[in-house]
Length: 336
Image 1 (spheres, rainbow, N blue to C red):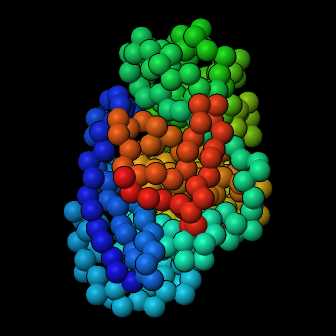
Image 2 (image 1 turned 120 degrees about the vertical axis):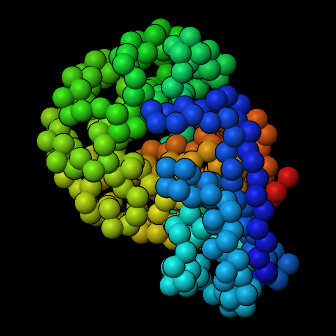
């Protein structure tokens, strides 16, 4: 295989804020893997919370570039195992793993969902994310982007009031992501009010390490509770059973599609709901997530929708949330 690496600085349509940070640009690494006239693409974004930069990922990958170029591709799962043995970070592995899956599908001339034995007849609609801001700006963002399903980032001193104001302007379903900002007591107090306001579930309301708190509230909370920061890698799925209603898998955090598929399978065995989320990727990363949608209960793959300018073509998300899957094999990605 022949490898290529390129750094992109993705400009966001609006400043994006959660309870711990804000940003207007997103650094992203796109990896290309080429073989027999086909090129597969994968992506991983930088993340200050996990101390990951594009430069750090490129340094990791360049250290084994010769070995990757000489690698004899048979199955993406074997390539993933090879990368794990080399000790790369999950973010770097994700970019390579996504590129390998895209390449593998293109070589076979089949989309990944078909290779995995699924069909895109039924899939969940992605939410559109509204970051923390003044209430007026949050309302304005929502009005600017009419959508049937919004994820609302909270973690302020007036969270309930924010949702009340948003509700006055739409009848869409809400999901709430508090990004570790609440206590168990606040969660149980807020949940009935939020349910009345049309909220579907709560994502990571308590700090990630407060598993005792989650165990205390999961069975009494009137809304489902989905793990995000508490479910990063494959080993975390079992830990979430009995503490959460479901899990949110991030490809960049777990290391790509290969472990994500195993996490989905294990979550089903444990009777956990399954969601896959994004990290403000371009259509390179979002198109990989889309291939998983027939296996999911929920999906958050609005990353490319939040950008001023996309860098790739792949999955197309229509105004009603319906998906148009690319005709190319793999994830169906082409760079613009």
